[in-house]
Length: 239
Ligand code: 1GP
Image (cartoon, rainbow, N blue to C red; front, side, top):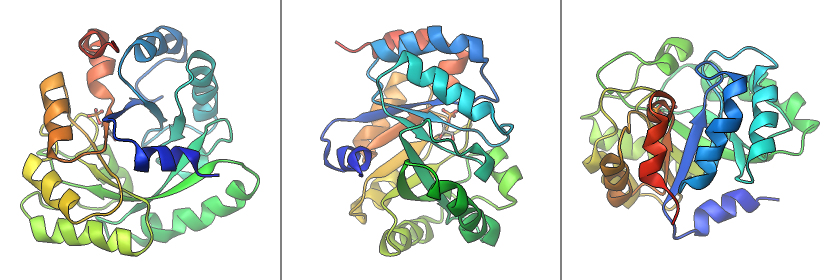
């Protein structure tokens, strides 16, 4: 059962995930928000956040599922954010950092919960890249982002993730990043990878979105820009 991953891997389409972060959105806003998502070119919904309370994710996922047919993937900041109401789980290992808690410990803790669930589990190498300001991921994980000029190290880290058997690599500038991931960096990572590449953090307009695809991202994640300006969806209407 890996239909969602296979679609990401084989799709020739530019994929777009809208991030729903319960830290930043009210449950009552979901219906109107998803209406805009449904009319846009979005192909996936990610739900998760760095500091979301236990149980909250579950109600958000249920609400999102109620108003869309798009696949809903958990993008969890913690083990407490696992819920069987989603379709799939990005099973993240923070491979840019050296905090064993986020490399293996949280994943071990997740296993008991996952045994009782039917989520599609997608192993994902998660890489935090510096963007000009401290991010929530950095604070919560107590890891430093990779220096954005450390191109070879970033390319090698992504490749190591692939060689370890990860199915996706996620280059993350952090939610609300000042600078999105550099295009040359995306291109260099993509050139060396045989698995799909996700890119997110700080993408605020259509031009940046298109540049990110052009550089080599298979799937782009946008959260803050939609939260701050729902009219942004109007630029991304599905024809
Ligand atoms: C954050 O990559 C995502 O984890 C999306 O970032 O909120 O800046 O779009 P933004």
